[in-house]
Image (cartoon, rainbow over the protein chains, first blue to last red):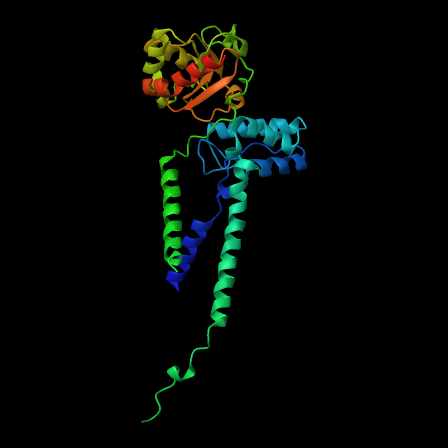
Length: 147
Length: 177
């Protein structure tokens, strides 16, 4: 039981989400809607210095500069799309964790569905073929008749 | 029925090829969307004299380099000799953007190590760096005489990089004019 509890503790720690340790300690925006947009955006923008973190999670100086820019743009009344365009113009598609759908990112977005289709097709072929096979002869599984 | 054996092997080979190519790439190098576009506007106080400014218009008229650096950046220390060599050669003016740094330390750095820059602008709040899509110093931009960004190099500049990456682009830009 003790070992089980210890395992649960380790698992909980290991799985506790990164946002519990968010680096963004700045004051909230006065407008709750803007604050919501701000939070959504900072969780979607990649910190390019520390590539596997969002700028909300990162303590890098660049991340805090980008948070400041985003906050300021929102306070000026600019839309979420305008902020994204601002970032994309400067840092390219890689800056967004969810890249836009366009020619160069089409493979990224469509490949999973394509692979699923191929897999489904292969699976249905296999099932059809198995169904067409004669049922396995029962006598093989029975004990040999008493001689 | 031969294809039933060859297909998986072929697919596996394809995957291996894709992964091998991926392994050879450096994921920290992100292509800049600025290449081919006009260099972003900026106006920064000069390091040597904050009353003067360095701006986009100062870059025009000649092919130039814009080098983003800071005294906190070890890669910048590494590439400093290269910048000095290029400056001695005199072929291309080098402009500096001192990124999120202490101006006093930056001035001392240039006095001690030598100053390869025609002029250095001080970007203390990092706003110009963001407009230039900078994410890790040192970064070096190649700017055409008309103010177009021709190339961006991320990582310390070396004479090999200069010869292999910058010179052909400069030559091509000249030929295209």
